[in-house]
Image (cartoon, rainbow, N blue to C red; front, side, top):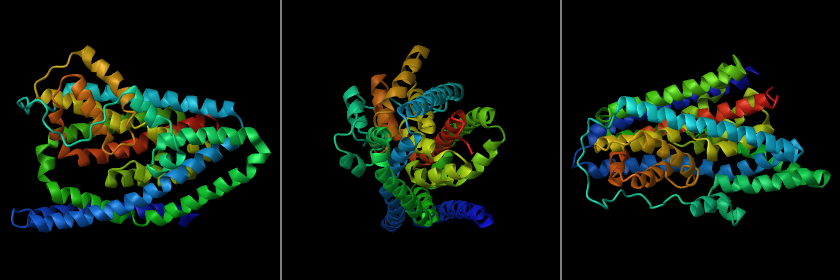
Length: 416
């Protein structure tokens, strides 16, 4: 048992060391190769680091679709009846909705209190200034197209978690209703889950290299100077994330009691991984493992986590309100309280529609800016530090989903 618990701790230590080394190496590269003459050498170094991170993220994405499908179907089939599935799903969605709304409101209150953009005094840009982002306006049609798969193979190929969840729910309910007849399929998928978790273990050995490369790449490109020039905005946003985690942690403490501390110990490695790679997805397989080790019911985790990755990205929600109001302040645009509340409701729903799109948060922010006549070119203010901010919001997304899985397990009296 001792060996079992010490291994994750050592892996966490390796990831933490990789994070620190990445900052040091990145800054050294920026200082030595950052000049105009040595530009190509720096670019080559950054490309190598990006390739290493990309390999890790690709390996993780490779296992997400079969893992989500197998865990969700097995979880629902073992629950045995549609009423239990519906009860767990409703509890999870109520929590997701409440946590998302709280994240948006907290972000709005903090950005209005701190006013990080008010000191920039930016001149309004020309109409139609390019942001370099793909155009993806959130509409009802886009949302439906993103939610319901026309082909499960296509959904798995594109790693569309929400579409995989929809198909898996139909498949799982059918397995549960067929009972004995579906047992061989459920057993096969149960076996697939354990194989995928074993593969996860192999892939996680490369996590420190990926974290080192991701952090070194960002710092080598922008230098620590960019953190200083945007220091106020970054500091206030991270303070907001800490307050959000404290609030979610307190809610967890009210229901879990002192076991919340054990939960924190179990999820620190997935959180550190999400922070280092700036990707919530990269932590999904490890988070599933750690929540089951903590004592969450595997059936409930198999249902709540995939739903959470589509509907419960608390850190990203806070970032969206922070970013929109930061850009409005930078251009001296004063948004009325009514407009801000409408913006919250818009973000609450549109953010669910483009979760599978790269840099989804920025695309949702872009669409929201144009909706409220705020210059979309203001996004360029964020691009320099988006990766640094993404690290914090990805870790917070993981934290929020782990709290959700633990709470629903407790409500279902299924926490070991």
